[in-house]
Length: 159
Image (cartoon, rainbow, N blue to C red):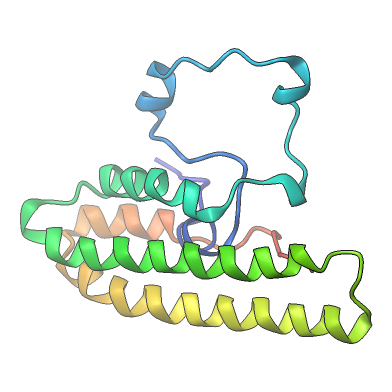
């Protein structure tokens, strides 16, 4: 099975418009009724905060990886890192949004530097938590993890 959800990027570093759900769960979850305007795709600046999406990502990944009770301790470390990463991303996005439209070129470059630092810090945090979990995974689970860990697919944050 191929996965299109990049684990590191989508799970940790980007704010996306929808929470990844397992295909079975998505099929059994009725879509809420909404006016046509609300069904339109969200623009980049309107996306939900990462902290509001992270628990869905955590549940999705735990299900897809088939985490066993013996792996639960390592998994909780990954889940904690994911939550911390989402909160760190939300903080830098909130700060950037507060000054939108009033920043000069130097300030915009400073915001880009903040995003790069958060990105690097989040990658390091997740890697430190993920290594022990990955070592405990079965070959089948590792294969699934390998499919879930992907590139950004061209998505980048811009201030």
